[in-house]
Length: 355
Length: 278
Image (cartoon, rainbow over all chains, first blue to last red; front, side, top):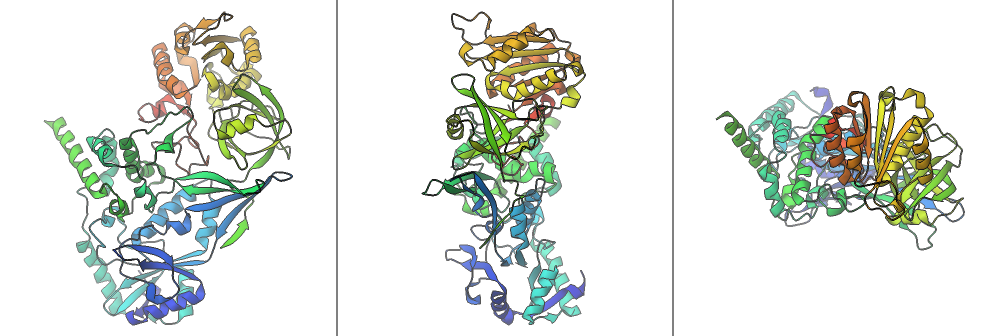
C-alpha cells in the first residue's frame, strides 16, 4: 500500500464524478429495480445509480461474455465465405463489488488459457472496472470471506472505499489514473485518511467471519471424500433443474454454439449462447446416452466445478461467495447450507472410521 | 457496438472440398476431403476435427485416414443427426468448413516398439482405422498387431474391402464378430468380448486401443484386465458432445478432464476412479 496511489473524493461529489464518467464513454452501473432487485445497466444520469446494493440479478460477466455473441458470419451464395467477428465497445463498469471482480478474474483465467479466446480478450481490453468495497455483508446469502473475495486485491482500475466523509480511491492502473486526472475532482489522500482505511480493513476481519465451518484449504480434501455423499441425493429431490443458479453465477461460462440463417437462406451467423450443466441435454451424446442423467449428478457437477475440479486445473476456487445461486434458487437450495451439511456428513464418516 | 473481423479467431474454419464420397453401409459414408488452399492437415491418429455446414451446425468427427497421407484426409460419417444427415446429402465438389485437429490422439511414440491390440466396436473402427493405417505404413516399428472388430449385423460391416485385405495379411491377426448373423455370414457370432479371451498376446508388452459405443467399454476392460493387461496400457477414446474443441464450453467435461483437450484418448489408469467417465 503506497499512499501515492490513493486519492480522496467527497461523498457529495460522487454524482459529479459519475456525470464526468458519462462524458468519457458508456457507463454501466447498478440500478435499483425495486423488491430488492438490482441490475447492471447503462445509465444516462448519475441519479439512477444506487451505490448501496445487494449483488445484481445477473453478474457483470454479461459484458465480458455476452449471453449471445456472434462468432462467425457466413454467406454461401456463390462460394463459402466465412468471416469470424468480434463485437466490443468502450465501457466503464462502475460500482462492482469485490465478489464480481473475483468472478471476472476467474473468467480471465479460463478464456486466456490456451487456445486463447481473442474475442473475449479484445472485449476485456475495452472495459474499465471501477469497484466499490463492501464494508459490511450485503445480506445473509453472501459467503465472500470464505473464498477470500471480501477484500479488494486486484482486478480493478479504480477502487472506491467508503470512509466517514470521503471515498478513498485506490488507483490500480494507468487507465484508472487517466480517469482520475480527467475528472479533476480528486484530492491527494492524507496520512489520516490512509490510517482510517487501514483501520477499516482491520475491522473488516472482525465483521466478515468465515461463513462456513471449515477452511478454504480443506476444500479439496472435503470434496474428494464427498463424491458419493447423501447430500447430493437430497438435492435430487429438491432441484428443479431450471438452470437459474448457473445463469446468475459470475464464474459459469459454459456455452452452446448455434446458427441462425437469414430469410434469404444464403447468409447467416454462428453464435455462442450461455448454456447450463443443470439442463437435460448438456451431457447427452449420440445414441441418447446421458452421462449426468440424474439431477443429483448435475448438482454435484456444479459444486465440484466450483470447489474441486478447477483447483486442479487452474489453481482457483470458482466461487466468489456472491450468494446469487442461493438467492435465485426456486427450490431454496443454499450453497452455504449444502457445504455445511457436506462437512457434517464427512465428519461423521471420519469419526466412524476412528471408533 | 463495434464489430471487427478477426481472421485469427480459433472459431474460423478452413474450406475443405469433397473429393470423393463412398457409401460404406446403409448409414455410413466415407468422405475424402482436401483443403482448398492445399495445405496439409497435420494430425495424430485418434484426433478429431470440427466439421461445419454453414447454417446447419458444427460437429466433432474423428479423422479416419492415415496421418502420413498428405494429399487428402477422410472422415467416416453415420447419418444420425441434423448435420450428419445433411452431410450425406452433399455431393462431390461441395465445400465444407473444417477446423482442427483437436484432442491428443493415440500416443503412437509410446506404442511403437510394443504389440498392438485394436478393439473396435461399430463406428469405433473409424478413429482406429487411422491408427491401423499408421501401423501398417510403419509396420516394422510395431510388434504383433491384433485387430478385433465387432458390429451388430454383417450389413453394418465398415470398410469391408479393407477388412478383407487386413484379414489376408500375414503380419496382422484379424478377427471379426457380429451380434446377429444373416444366412450368408460365415464368421464369428457374438459380442466383441467373446473374441478377447482367444487372442494370443503377451500382456506385458501389449497396448490395447479400444473405441466403440459407450456401453462396450466396461465389458471390454474387464476382459482385458482378466488377460493381465496393465491399466496404463489400455487406451480408450471417449465420445462426448463437444462444441468448441478447446476446453472452454464445458460440454465434454469428465470431472476435471476435458475430453476435447485432455482426451479424447485416455489410459484406463487416468479414468478408472472417475465416475461419469464410463
